[in-house]
Amino acid sequence: MEYRTVRDLGRAEFVEKKSRFIGTCRPVKTEEEALAFIAQVKSQYWDASHNVYAYILRDSGVQRFSDDGEPQGTAGIPVIETMKKAGLVDVALVATRYFGGILLGGGGLIRAYSHTATIGLQAAGKIVMRECLLLELPCDYGFYGKAAGLIPECGGVVDDTQFLENVTLSFHLDPADLPALSKKLADLSRGRFSLVEQGQAFYPFDLE
Image (cartoon, rainbow, N blue to C red; front, top):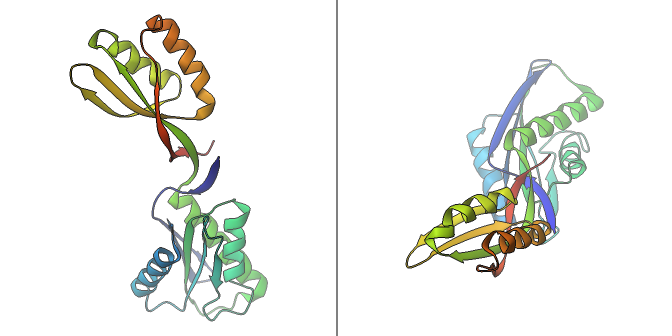
């Protein structure tokens, strides 16, 4: 199970016929978080001609957008459609415009706001969130070096290591990689050590 979103806050801008467009984007989980982010960007660019926005939430399925005074259909829709085409959720984006005195026309506005959304999303970094297994590998100190190499070799990411009477490596792993890791671990340890499942959680992976 997976979904696409953005990694972090990102901002990019360009100029079209003397109008300055700024795309500011970040990941959000709730409508409150999205609205707070939009309000923050509007406050930052309080003197802009327009602060167009859009957001899409995964869990609630909420999708909202605003033209913020631009002609209907020329701003908010191009922004949210760009997000949809990229398959992104849990994302909020504000497309700010400082009017440069030259009218762009309906088609020009649609292209400009689409591009603002595109570069804003790129700046925030598109990622895929995959539901991973949370696993532990308890072992003795003699096997620790092999375990520490085996986990990343099989696609796992070590999140924590506890050094007590024995060593316990805590890590997350794509479920598809579990059979290969289990087999290699059994072969390498001659069946002495085995994995312990602790649950599941979403983790970010770069889009290929």
